[in-house]
Length: 234
Image (tube, rainbow, N blue to C red):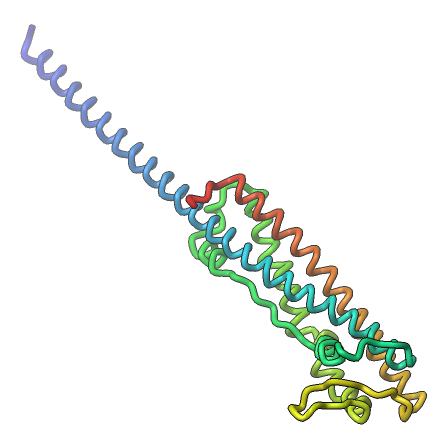
């Protein structure tokens, strides 16, 4: 065997050794990157899921509050019509009638996802559900509660309603509203004004109440989708 043949085999062996080593190193790096992205995706989805569980509680509380506000409109309509009412609950219903609510969402998981890149979530349908909930439905809830003028019940209606009904309110020595006497001194126009306020408040609360219900269902659906993609370590 000539020396040139021996050198050729030696160089080929060295080349193959280097090539295989580089290829394996590249494959290992890519595997590590994919594995890290997978773990990051899992962690982010779990963070979103945990935040959504808290959001469900807040959504439910606000929805119940609007439901109570709807019932308060019925309560005060009966009052204006001299229908029998439960006066023990007057304070509760008067507060519920004109109470506003804040929209609170736990967005840390979603903000973390956006900072890492939305493409971190490989499943298109899951990614779209997340974006739709946070950037559309939660935004609508926030606008309904905090910026939509017709839903600012306290700011819009409190002074007018309170000015007409204050004369008939009875307070205890601690200033707690405990009774309300028949509104016999109200004019026909004043009663109609109050009824128009109650109608408007009820209409807007019903829309908001129904929208909260729809968003709650979307949150539950998204939690279910996330649970299919990740396993909670707890």
